[in-house]
Length: 406
Image (cartoon, rainbow, N blue to C red; front, side):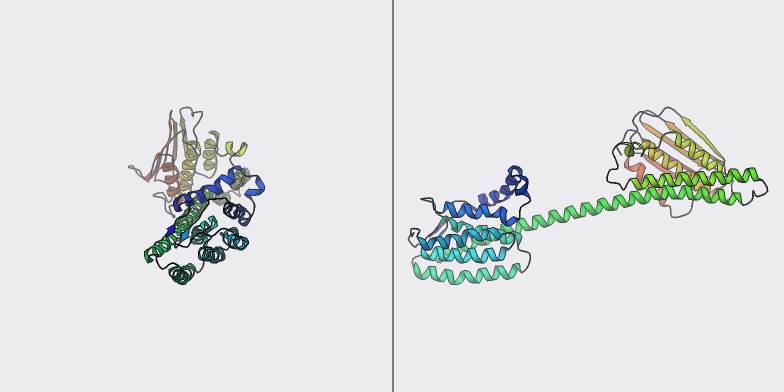
């Protein structure tokens, strides 16, 4: 005859799952940071104490009569209860000790409540054992054979099916632990994957910012420095050209410093967050910088910017910056038109470069800048296009919804 423990397997699993969370919510700070062996100690003490409560019975395998607790029973109860302290730190040791105590408990006929520790030890081993899991399962199964033979000899009337049923119930406890372990591993892998995707997205964003800042400023400085080589006969114009190179370098340093601030954990609070979106006046500064590099630029701005544009202003600035950089690199000297229109819920940007200058045409290079712009605009739910204009040259258009979060 097999009498199941008072706490069912499913109820026991739920209790084990909820107990740590309940303890974490209500326990003091020192308890939450205590070692797992300390936090598992109350469970062992509970099983040991409840075993002395009258009419409390645990698992009974076989038909042996129940024997009252005596001095020898204290050792048997302790052997089953207290190893639960290491059920997470040393699950194999816990299972071995609890199994030995359970065998003695059943063969002597105590049938104590502490025998409930066996399914707990099996569930814990299935959930926390990392190495030699198959070996432990085989050893436990082989060790059950002599125990079943002993039960059959002490109680010949006990049908073998009862012993098989008990073994299958213990296998179920192990299986529940294995399921908990696989769930925990899958959750851990999911968190790692999310963290890696977040890091990749952050690296991509920083690389995009670096491309926008460095490419534009360095391109402008190179063009300005090249032009200065032919102005040695005109000191005033040479001074203006070198001043433009210096100003461009200072702006590059300021933008790079701001970009490095993005890596600061405190970024996003106070003035750091406010400085992320360029003011409207920076578009005009950008155009003036490009003009100083020898590119004829016509700038038109229509409408009034909305009070809250989210990331739209920043993306619009980057679109104009990348388009002007490409104009300097691939259509230097060609007439370039920049048109920015502020609507109620969107910003429309159009940058057109004629094909009459030196090297005009479709931008070459890696295309990383335009691809980055397309991603920026797509994230905000806008539209982006870049290609040859009908009348020649190159045109970049972007419709950027305003008010979208960063």
